[in-house]
Image (cartoon, rainbow, N blue to C red; front, side, top):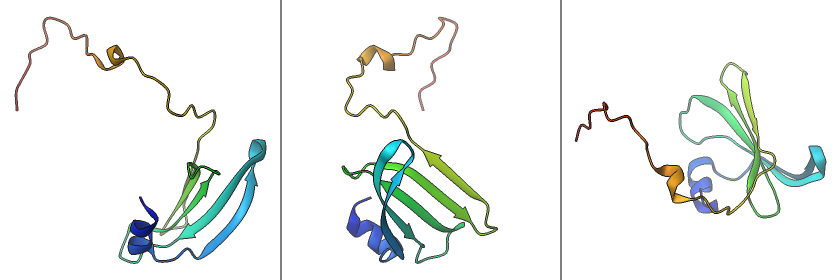
Length: 97
């Protein structure tokens, strides 16, 4: 989402600070709460100097939370097109929808 889309959906960040995560990764940390009804209380985001999210935390209404942390990210890597080719068995029936 762009910054303007974030503000429309969540308003201004409630908490903003700079933090260093594990491995010395410098981040900007923000906490946002949805303006409309959602299935969670709030989300926290940690973004690196390029604006790439490196960690997210979503806190549910019952205070359970899920944290996702990205590490060893390889940006803008070339992916061979054959990685997307499906090699299906000849017995597979193709159905057009």
